Amino acid sequence: MKKRNSHKNKLKLCHTGHILLLSSAFCLAFTILVSLQQSRQNELDLIETNCGGSCHMAASRAEERVQHALLAEATARRALLMSSALQVTVSDSTKPAVPAAQWTIRLKDHPELLTLGASWLSAEYVIDTNILAAKISTAAFEGQHSVIIAEGAAVQNDKKVLRLTGTKVARDGYLYDPEDTAKKIARALSKGEANITIDAPYTIGFVTVPTDSDPLTLQLLSTGLSNFSDSTADREWNIFKATNEKLNNVYVPAGEIFSFLDILDVPITLNKGWREGLGLFGGGTAMTAGAGICQVATTVYRAALLAGFPIAEKRNHSMWVDHYEQYGVGLDATVFPKFHDLRFTNDTSAPILIQSFIRDKDVVVNIYGVSDGRTVTLEGPYFNASEKKPDSLKRLAKNQIGWMYHVKSGEKNKTTPLISTYSKGFPRKVVSDYADFRGINVLTETLKKHL
Image 1 (spheres, one colour):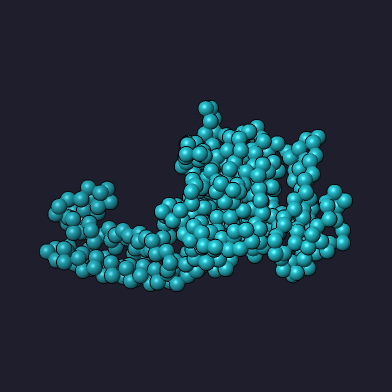
Image 2 (cartoon, rainbow, N blue to C red):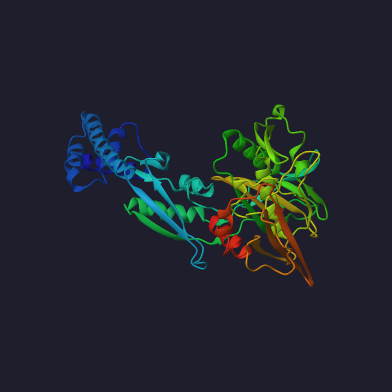
């Protein structure tokens, strides 16, 4: 009877956690085996009936067998998870016209998502939802298309221009709930599902800039695009440099004039990191440092037009350039220090911020500000051979492309003809390709599909 009571006391001590040194081996074995399946009951019986001098050895052997079995099961489970792939489709049920985002999670590409949860009673590889949520919040998966809200830290002087510092490039996209999304994805992966659909709000990216009081929110006013496919490596280098280093995050206060030459920190020299390529000069070509900068200037010009800003200075290229046809045929701008600049006025009551980046082979320029309700319409393009042209557009020569530019602001309406002249003309195919073009409507749809 005393032996049985002693045995019960040991069980009680194990249960309460007050483990005595003399009974530690028994407690360890009992704690490991008490919740195992019925098939391991024999091991428990063996330990309970041999708790003499051989108790420690029995517990150790049982512990080893249990650990081997648990780890074998966990390893098999991990191999199964590592071979899985989940396609995630994200859409906004309130905006069915917005394209869905699709991205795939393959655990073999992200082994850090698997963690081993182990105790004396179990061992299992599980998906760490905290790590997964952190990846989702930073848009770590290609195709995730997350919204990016750009919060500026300060506006600083940079020689002739002002720049917003400490901010990302704002993007439209889906606003994820990282924790909830991670749990849903982890559950689907654990079940071996191949697809999952998640509903998330599609949100327009915006920028916040510091002021003397509360931060000011700037909304997207316009987007300009141009394509530089088939450019040389040196031309691409200059385009990237101008887009990412010189133009991005330029801040223009209300009433001030933007100058493209000011952002470049002229003169343009090889010593400043620019590369040499073919440039246009008076109807011919010559090697020059910074070739390709006009690709970015053209994109800024298009964004400024679509925002409705008054253009203070602009000149098109003397010769036709294929790189400027897409997204706005005949709407190109050239710059050259001391001779040609691109300038426009921020005639709104709030500052504007210009953000720029490269997507594939496109330069993208976004202008953010506070909308005053103005609207922009572009009619065109028109050619010498166009059958129907506005009466207010003068007769075009064969080497000219024309647009009619309408800006409506409140009760004011302003119409301006935009005419580009190319000394050696342009391919005949251009006329036929744009015979049925519908100006701003087509440009707007192109932008929506692109962005």
